[in-house]
Amino acid sequence: MDKFKKYFGQLNMTWSRVFLLAVITAVYTALINQVSFLKDTSFQDIAIYVDWWILFAVFIIVNCEKWWEAALKCFVFFLVSQPLIYLIEVPFYGQGWEIFRYYDYWFKITLLTLPGAVIAFQLKKKNWLSVLVLSVATGYLAYASVDYYRAAMTNFPNHLLSAIFALGLAIFFIFVLLDNKKHRIAALSVLAALLIVFGLFTGPDKTEEIFLEEGSWTYSMEDESVVMIEMTDDNHATLTAKQDGNTFIHFENTDGTEINYYVTVSGGGIWINLLDED
Image (cartoon, rainbow, N blue to C red; front, side, top):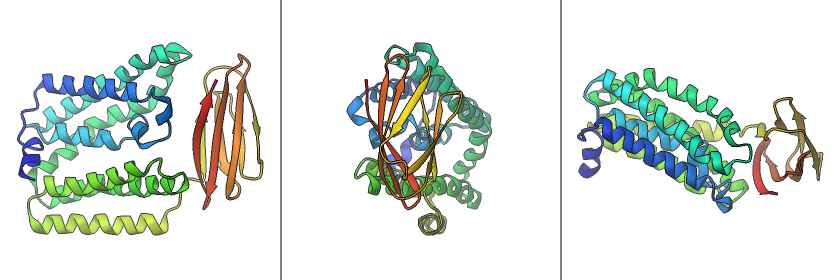
C-alpha cells in the first residue's frame, strides 16, 4: 500500500506529465472504441462513463501542491484528452467531423473539473472533511457498480469487469487516500450503506436513448410489447420499457445504412446491445 501512496500524493505532477497522461488516455480510449467485438462490454465503458476518468482526476489532484494548481491541471487534462479522443476517431466515423457533436457532454464535465478539483483537493488534508469529500466520489462509484452489475446479470458478463472495477476503485481510494483508521472505517461504512441503499431502493433506468447518425431513419421491431420507441428530429430514439422481455430493433437509413440492436427489459430496466452495423 505504501507503494501506491507514493503515486497518490508524493509524485511531482508536472505539466509535461499532465499532457502525457492526457495523450495516452485519449489514444487508448479512441482506439479501444473501434474494436467491434468489444462493443457494449467493460472494455469500452471508458469511452462512455466517467469511472476511469475519476481515477485520472484524483491522481492529478492529490499530486498537486496548491488548490489552484490542481484545478488548472485537472481542467487542462480533460481539455486536451476529450477532444483528442474525438479527433482520433474522425477517420473511423462515417460522418467524419460530425462526431464532435457528442463532445457536448464531455465539455460540460471538463468545465465542472475546475470547481470539482478545488473541492477534491481537500483529500490531501486527510481529515474528516476529506472523508466527506471522498464519500461523494465513492458514493458515485457504489451506484455505478450496482448499475454495472445489473447490466452484467442481464447480459452476462458484458459489464461485470466494470462493476468490479468501480467497487474496487472506491475501496482503493479509501485505503490509499486516508491514513487514520477511524477515517477509513467511517468511509467504508458509508460505502457499505450506500451499496445497500442503491441495491435495494434504486432501480434500473426505465428509459434509454439511442443516438443515430445524420439522415432519415425508420425502424422495425420484433416484439412491440417490450418497449416503446419515440423518434426525435435530432435522430435520437428514446426507448421506454413496457414489460419484461427481449426484442430486436432494426434501424435503416435512407443511405442504406442498417443498424441492429438487441434490447432486454428486466425489472423495468432497459439494456441495449449493438449487434452489427452494415
